[in-house]
View (tube, rainbow, N blue to C red):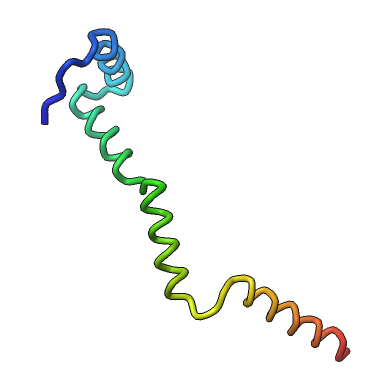
Length: 78
């Protein structure tokens, strides 16, 4: 992988940050790339949530309402 047209001031700033951590610029940049790619994008999160919602056999609201109803029944029976 090559990165072209990086402004000299940015390259110096990154090199200084790497040095402050006791790392080479290459190691520092690999860490940044790994950190960035380990987090899902907003689109990936929304797609995952949509898939889970499609697989659900009951809505969250229905589950909460059922639990409240059950609790009310328990409390009224005491």
